[in-house]
Amino acid sequence: MTNPLLDIRIGTMIKGNLPDPAAYVRQILPLGFESIEPFFWQTIGGKDIPKLAAELKEAIGDADVKIDTLGMFGNPLETTDIDQQTLEGWKTLIDNAHLFGAKTIAGFTGRIRGKSIEESLPRYKQVWSELAKRAADKGVRLAFENCAMDGNWATGDWNIAHNPDAWELIFNETPDDNIGLEWEPCHQMVYLIDPIPQIRKWAPKIFHVHGKDATIRWDVIRESGVFGKHPFVQMRSPGFGDSDWTRVISELRLAGYKGCIDIEGWHDPVYRNELEITGQVKSLNYLKEARGGLSFIANPA
Image (cartoon, rainbow, N blue to C red):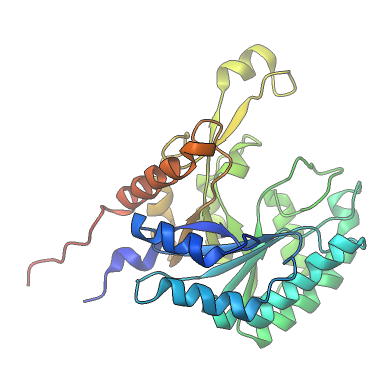
């Protein structure tokens, strides 16, 4: 009998630019991760992607661990050398996703620097319409993370897909079925948006989920507002923040989501550095419990 708990797998992200990502995977697999998301920051850095795929598959071996999503984070809409490397990175990952067994490539939309979301839309449509077709020809989906990267509606860098109003605009520009979201509650809570209703509304566009949370410091807001010297919100690993992940996962299940929740580490202000993996494993077990328990128990015959 298949394990229906694994309709939603709990995993983690790994840095594709590590000298030896496969060695890292071998170290963390015994901890109980069920999926991994290899990701790159701005450039694939000369990595031999087919070789990396083979090395990761060998490291996973017979373990029941999937690579569902690959990450490419940068600004593919601009024209500097590093931005062009990001765009080429998207193309490379799209073309090689099948070697990993991945169905989705995720990252930022990009943005015209210093311009409003509306002013970025023509370039967005130009780039992503082409990438969507390339991905569709390969049977691959494209998912935009909902992180503002300190931008807002009027100006910024990196990403325009950080707000539900922006999602309406970009999906109107690119109505392709294979363009969607890499969603997480954290980046909505950072802007004081309730993430739960989004699941019901946007579920058909949620292709991948990041395991990241936030703590809203309402005492700071009441005393200093959101533009004071003290941060009013902290990005947290699941189990340490404000989100009820039992409810999050229940809403995802009710909406028909089947896929992975990959923990995005390296952000928690407490469980970091020497406590990084300690925090991630706590999040792993917390999310498994929120999913319905640590193990599947079949009904009596």
